[in-house]
Image (cartoon, rainbow, N blue to C red; front, side, top):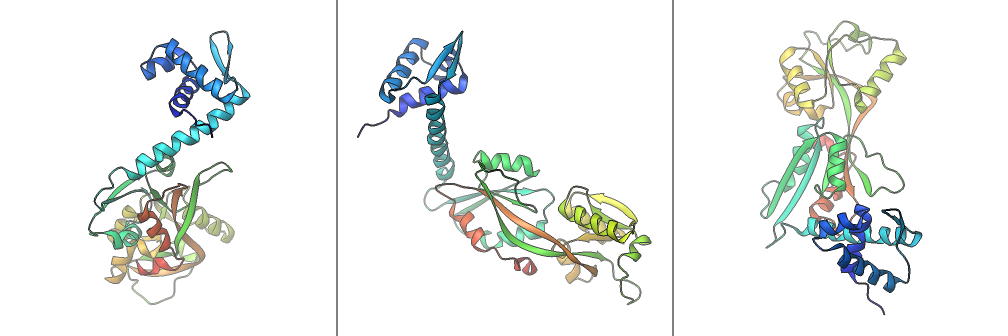
Amino acid sequence: MPHLNYHHLRYFWMIASEGSMSRAARRLNVSPSALSVQLKSLEEQLGQSLFERKGKALILTDAGRIALDYANSVFQSGHELLETLTGLSSGRQVLRIGAVATLSRNFQIGLLRPLLGRPGVELIVRSGGLADLLAQLDAHKLDVVLSNQPATVDADSMLQSTLLAEQSVSIVGRPPATRSPFRFPEQLLDEPIVLPARGSVIRSSFDAIMSRSGVVPRIIAEVDDMAMMRLMARESGWLALVPPVVVVDELKASLLVERYRIPDLREEFYAVTRRRRLQNNLVLELLSMSSTGRSTSF
């Protein structure tokens, strides 16, 4: 069985990536003539021309495009291997987590609690926007992204979303002076409310409910950070639209109460991962704990 020379394949991959023999030679710290010899050796082994010249440009042939697809897969797998195994020694495990900035801290800590303080486990948690975190995940700089919405993918995407939990969304506030039931949605005409920022899943669903009811709520603030919404609800006396997990401590201490649980309005929590040949065992552990009822324990 013939064996592919991966050294030659890497040279071809660099030429295709740079689009120039001279630029690729500089990147590889070899002479253009030596690089040309290596490319010719690969073409002879494959029995196909991989480039055609058009002026000074190198254009991939049909065979070259097929070879590049395979080369990308080969070197991506090698990069994935290094990223996955780096830092793993003597039983030490590293889990690199990206968390969307709008995600409840209480949910995050509840999800990660089984790993906190476990001997040999190091957690690296980074916060940011979903698009940036998914780019880091795709580049193998993160092992998993925690989000309140699934990743949007196409047929060629390597990303996949796993539903970890879902929770009801409620209007919370300080204990009312009377025990009169909350009049939803009419009472929102009078009482100020803090809402998640536009564009969030919760906000879009809430706005649709308000539109159908014909009620224009008295919005006092729009916030894209759940930790800030928690503080506003606790300190201001205003109502707030949040999943109860966000204010679980305040509810337990009776600083806040659930004034009204909105039917059919729920927040979902996802773990977004990248398909890999060798998955981090800690990621698999997190995914194995997924349950649509899990959030009630946080």
